[in-house]
Structures are given as structure tokens and as C-alpha cells.
Length: 109
Image (cartoon, rainbow, N blue to C red; front, side):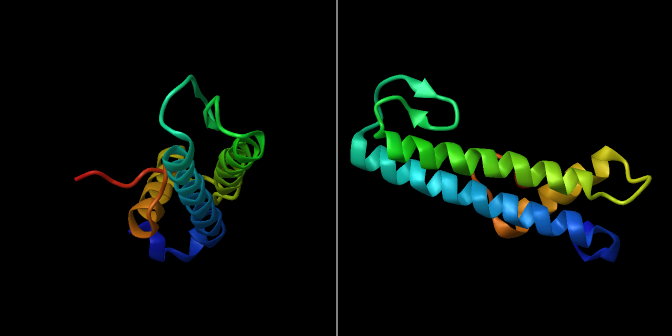
């Protein structure tokens, strides 16, 4: 299990933040769908076109944060660490902490 490997502390921390941002995005999306309806055009990052601008902007913020933090996790991988290893670490973090629509996804059995 990579979660306990001290070499990955930096990347793990960024993946934890990315998963938290992903959960925040998904929670806001669910609240917004309940409040404003699940109809209309789908828009990447901000879910639905008919949401109020302030809601769409917050959803965009969270989607961008997931990408930014995931990128930092990859950039902080130890030298000579294969990309597949860092992806596995992200999946382990998502499995342990939970995730949303964006970013690392849990390991499926």
C-alpha cells in the first residue's frame, strides 16, 4: 500500500486536497440540481447551463482546484517513480477518503 510509504507524503497530501475539492464540487452540484432542477444543457465543470452564475463560478472553481491539485501531486512524485505508481496512489487516497466526479477515483473491486 502506497499510502504508508513516506516517499509519497507530498503527492499524497495533494491528492487528499484534490479529493476534498472533488467532494466539495459534487456536493454543490447535488445541492444545485435539487434547488434548480436537473434539466437543460450540460456544461463541463459547472454541470448545468441554467444554474445561477455565482453557482456556476463556484463549481468551476472546484473543478479547476481538482485539476490543479492533482497536477501538483504528479509533479511532486519522487524521482524515478513511474506515472502508474502515482496514479495508483491517487486511487488509494480516493478509496480511503472518498472522491467526487472529478479527480482520482476509488479502486473498484
